[in-house]
Length: 65
Image (cartoon, rainbow, N blue to C red; front, side, top):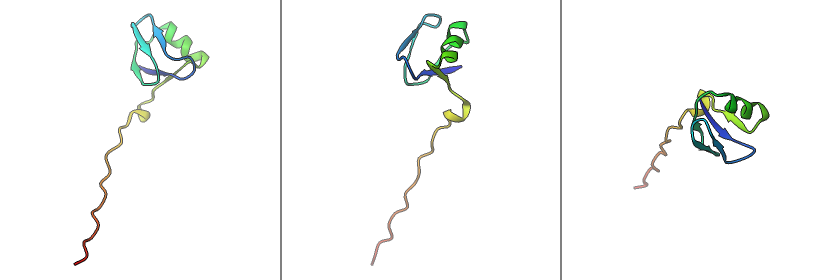
């Protein structure tokens, strides 16, 4: 699962030995993570949030001849 911190940040995850900040981080599902989710310190990333934006093409301006 991927989570990021929203209230108390950054927080050290003692289970996976990673620092959880504002960017989503892959962590294992543990009681500690579940507790942080319950109290609102972390938010779990949903697949729809991970969709990358495709670069948009801007049309070239028509040249006046």
